[in-house]
Length: 238
Length: 219
Image 1 (cartoon, rainbow over the protein chains, first blue to last red):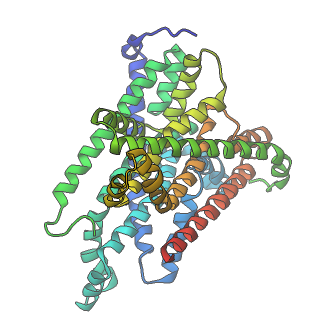
Image 2: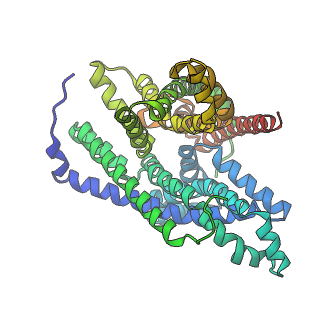
């Protein structure tokens, strides 16, 4: 088999536009999912460290379910199955009236999946603060909520920054699964260029380089955040 | 909402089972190949001349910054071009997963090797072993014992990742469930069944890993 090279396809319309639109959707899916993942993941992570046995059990169930089903299948469950199981009106609203259902499903599904992984980092981050700090907070009269708010979480947040960087990279990469439910993000667009022009190598090279660039940007940005938030005297690693 | 039809699942069991065999075969090959190649890469990064170590590091960091789906598409496109004839989705998936997972395994193995104290390597070399012999007989056995749980956890993630061969139409368990779901119009039953199977298998496997960890901690 011989391959006909044609790199100019990448700067030809409409293909250049497809790549840029793919990049936009990758960023939108990953960004929205990241917000969901951070909020839910922090909540579930805190649940797993609370004194209440029920709270810890709830957190564990969440993490085990979302960690042990493939992300692809989770997206299919959110997209094809859950709307059918919900009350008829809500199901109809999701399928008919919700604008861009593929996008919201992908972002939410990816967010809830990543939340389980972030919850584990948050839990480890809180545990790494140490019992001493928790006990000192309690001894100085803080309630459990106050202890988390003023002592445990501010330190834990700094502990989890390095692992969060790799979770953020994962969410960017995993946003490619959105193509399976019809969101034409970067990988999906490069695939579409391949099937339209047969210039697969060029299209995949472009998408791959954009992913590598995104990775480098994320690492640089997170390093800046780490440096800006570091507390002198408290090591990131407990 | 329609009635739950378990027959749709029951009738599809042989097809789903053959899909599961494909998933497990892919897992077994990618895990074995990935760990072997990952070990070589880890050793290169730690002991090879600087230029070679840099290439190995580039390999790992490059693959780790690209989505697995992208890698699957790449090899689905490239393998037939390189070999010069169509090879089918399975062969290209096996190659993609082995090379991709090797990057992730090698990071675990590198940390594991670094966890073995430097004195061990020095002592082995002082006792007259070559560097390769020292790795094989002294360092790697200790490193592998310690990192077995993490390697297994990574392999559970790999098993879940095999579902992504869906994008090139290879009939693994996930794809078999999806094909049946659409053919029979029984999406709810098939996807819930598939979820239950994945959840059961992965949960059981991760419980075993936890038990192994506890046993290693006490011994």
